[in-house]
Image (cartoon, rainbow, N blue to C red; front, side, top):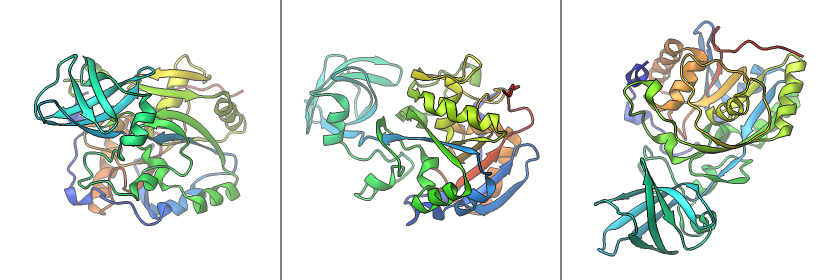
Length: 348
């Protein structure tokens, strides 16, 4: 398949620039991947779409204030965006400036000098004055996505985090989780829906387009993943009871599928470059809560692998016509799989 197979038209006015005043007030478009049928709902309707014993799995990563500005010796302005830590005082970052960079050069920031060590594709390895997360926590600003055309404000520090964010390391929010607040979580608990957590530190590469001519030629960016024994046990309990495992976000789906790469879900702690696109068969999830994603993005390709490209693009066309809010601060979808999206599973 080609990247342009995942193109759709989106009026710029539908890109949400600010969050709603209440997290769970978002709209929810349901999509049945088996039939292509959709329905307009609200996020507060989610408990009614689930059954007691279903398992919701969330990503508990915490967004780092990952954007730092600096100045070159020549006076040129530099923008540095953390991708991930790479050692005690080193990190992989994206760099932007009016002119290019060279290995060995340095630039000034409010936290001290940053020296460029090397490059790998779009990322630069840099040496920092202190440990990476401490450096960015002290000197960085909230890294709102490039399609949010405003300067971050104090409110973004809280709203561009989920209510259960705890493991520092992401440079972009797991946006499906942004719709959950204490009231919705209480309603889900009252419904008897179980809860589990994985950690996937979302990297800035999540916003990068697919530049390869075909999907098979695309090299996915690396992201750090932890899947603990507790969530593996939770999935096993849901399976044994005949209940569903619902990934809250594409990051959770990617984490669980990485941990099940050998066929069975098992604890995992490492990096993943798993690229899920149509033709992939899911081993671990039965439904997906997700936001609307950019045209030609790897995230849209993953949702298309789960519910079928034609069904997903038709649902997106409806969402555009119905004026849903798109992307990070936008509305959500509840998606169930296409007939051929799931791998054959043995139930214990």
